[in-house]
Amino acid sequence: MLILSRDGTPATGSPLWVDTFDVRPSETREVAFRGGNRGIWMNHCHNLPHAHQGMMLRLRDDGVTTPSGGSHGAGPGHGPTT
Image (cartoon, rainbow, N blue to C red):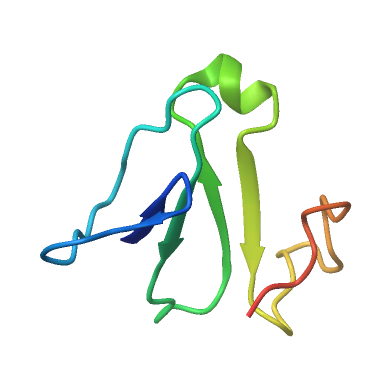
């Protein structure tokens, strides 16, 4: 992922490409990523209580379904993404 901004302030200096990064309470990050492998992907917090509280999201390319078909887990914030 490429870090674009932290708390609304654009990143400066050399581009920072990372696999993981910290987000402290009430902080926000804007990131970009290259999606070269179509499918269904989960982004999540590595702090499991946080993940349980909702710091997870599923990215699904248009036209991709789960192995069991349909939109398993679809709901607010879990819709199709390209």
